[in-house]
Amino acid sequence: MLLLWTPAAALLSASVLYQAPVLLNHDVGLFLHGASRLLDGAALYRDVVEINPPGAFFLSLPPAAVARLTGLPAPAAMKAWVVLLVLLSGALCLHAARRTLTGVSPGVRACFLLALIALLLPAARDSFGQREHLLVILAMPYLVAAAGWGAGSPLDGRRALLVGGLAGCGVALKPHFLLLWASIELYLAATRGPASLWKRRENWGIALAGAAVALYLIVAAPDYFRRSLPLALGTYGLLNAPAVRLLLNPAALWTLGALVACYAVPPGPQLRFLRRVLAVGAVAVLAGAVVQRKGFDYHFYPAGALALLLITVVALDLAGRVEGMAWRVRRLFAAAAAALALLLAVQPRPPADSVVDTLLGVLNRPPAAETFVLFGLSEYPAFPTANYSPARWASRFSSVWFLPSLYAAGGRHGASSLYRRPPEMQPLERGLFEDLVTDFVRERPRVVMIDCNTAGIGGSGFDLVEYLSQDPRFAALWPSYQPVPVPHLHCMRIYRREG
Image 1: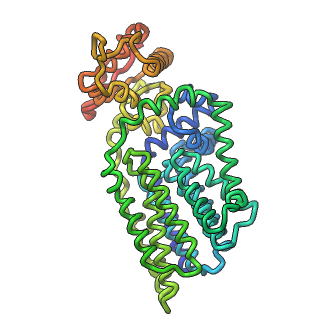
Image 2: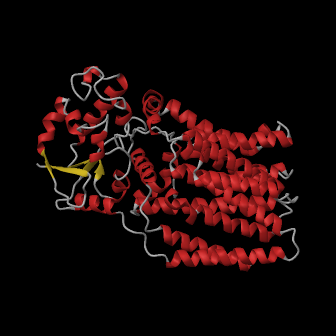
């Protein structure tokens, strides 16, 4: 077993060192910032406006708290937290496999862990810490336990409850993730009887996690229903991608290939149910990615990860039935893990993000800015810039991503100018407009950055400053801002408040 555990440790260490200098993903940075604001006493969906359920903020609370208590940079604390979750997930997967997949050899379990480490750490790449990444990390022990239940070897009660609770935290990150849980439980109900739905302690844990999130939204965060949900329903559809782009994503092709391999290689008795659970899971998370209709690569990470894991299990299953092949496959896995660890160790440092670096330079230019805001059409580059800068983010919004949807059919709609005047705005736009101006006037950010892509809102010629200047409060404050020349940023206007 030393043949496999040594490369596993090397791969884990090399993956951590490789990921350490990489900038935090913008969405991850946003949730980490939101968690820090919650620690300050801010109200989610009122003081931090976001359309996602609260799960990602809750999972970011531990690193935010550790960073605050220890002085550790928050991005480093977040990455360490994700690695700890990977270690916990791997340990629970091994425990569940030993307890429930009793016919599987220790060598096969170690090869499975090697593949899992590779898929959860280096293969995550830009998805590191994203909600989809966290889903796979937190749901993996649940999938192994589900295979054990299908084989007639359920996990013991307390550990099953823990595994279910972790899976529930993952499933609660997005409504689309419910497809994974529903598909696995429908499969188990079909194979082991419908009583499995309430007998499985894993489902108790998932239900408790879901109930906790629902209770929080109803009691502590009613603005989710009053503000964030209408915002999502009224604006987010503009970002939908063409169906062809969704179906031709590499993860969809990997899933198809994994299903073909699963069908072509007859299953052995030891890994039969693990193969089926992974196949059902891969199809479910692929469906979840397609249903979101955005085409973002990280949406497809779970499908790609489960598909590759399924191919790995099929290969291990086949090798175990060919005389003398199992030992060769274990050596191959060990060599592949060692090679990947070496490759990660000798990789050059990831290239710097020139945009974020330039923005940080602007904020740190003496006298350093105390507060800033960036009006753009996405969270990037405001985040992760805000996570690495000592300057405080000065808005409840991460961007003005919602404006293109509000003006998708052109801004006039019978108005006398490109922009709807406040009395002409629908309640949704009027509320967003008021919040943008209120934050600006209250915070008086030292530095203001405006992405030039905002000029394309509603077709062309949209001037965000002119739009916000329809409010007298903004119009009175804006003359105190002067342009800051930044030669290397061709698509960003930067202003600094004097006095």
